[in-house]
Image (cartoon, rainbow, N blue to C red; front, side, top):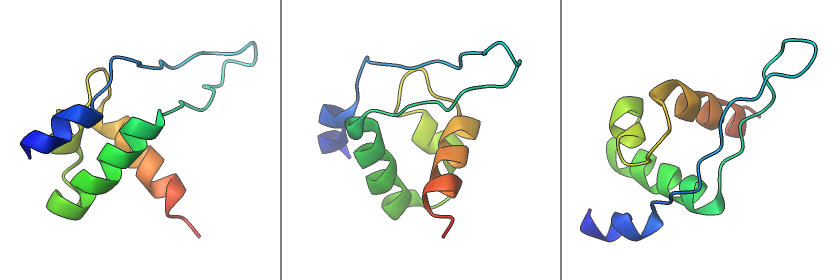
Length: 72
């Protein structure tokens, strides 16, 4: 798993509230998307473990991203 370090990034997006008080969609970088996919293939739905590899991301954000990405 040491090779996964090259996919971590300091480019972190945050939740932004708009005037209607709804959260806008959180954007993930391509590196984060790649890392999430690789980690999911290794450890499955262990969201907190995956989030621990991506600075500034919560397990809930990652699970929401994964669920929305694979919801077809």
